[in-house]
Image (cartoon, helix red, strand yellow):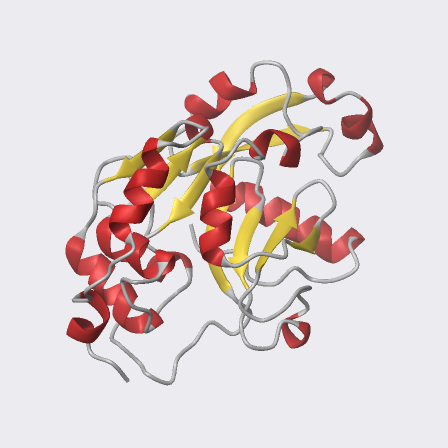
Length: 241
C-alpha cells in the first residue's frame, strides 16, 4: 500500500490539465472549493495518485457542478453551505484507512438531478449485476430503471461531461425550462417527475409532467424501490447523499 505522500506528491499531476479542460468546457462548470483533509483521506483509501483524473479531483476540489446544476461530480467534498459530499461519504468509506476495503459494487462518482447515477465498475461487474467491463463507467438511467454501460473510463467520462454531448445524452429527458429548475436546486436536492420518467405518459409528453424538488436521497429511493418492483433487478447501491 502506498502512503499519502506517494499518492499526492507526484511530478506530473493531472490537475493543471483538468483546469485547462474546465476553461474550454462547452457546458457551464462550477469547481467547488476543496476540503484538503477530506481529499487526502479519499486519495489514501482509493489508492490512486494525483496523476489520475480521479485522484486529481479528490485532492484539488470539492466537486464539480455542471450544466447549471444538472450533473454533479463527486470529489474530495466541500464544507461550503451548499457543497457536495465527498467520494468517501457517498461511497461509505471506512472512518479510518482500511487497506482491505473496496467498494463491492463499484464507485459512485456522479449523479444528475433526475436520480441518474454514474458509477465506476469494480473488479467483477457481472457479480454486482452491472454491465460493462471492470474500470469502465456505468449509468443508472432513471427512465429505464436499469444500469447501462458507457464504454469509457473515468477520465474520458470527465472530458465527455465537459463536451457538447450531454445534450444528446439527455435527449428526451429535458423539458422547456429545465435549466432554470436545475439551477434553483440546492446540491442536496433532485427533481421528481410525475408521471414517473419510466412511464408511457412521461415518454409521450415530458413537458406535460409535473415536477418538484425533493431531497436527492428520496429521488434515489423512489427509483430504487420501483426498480426492485418493476425492473429486471435490484439496482443495488446508488450512493449515500
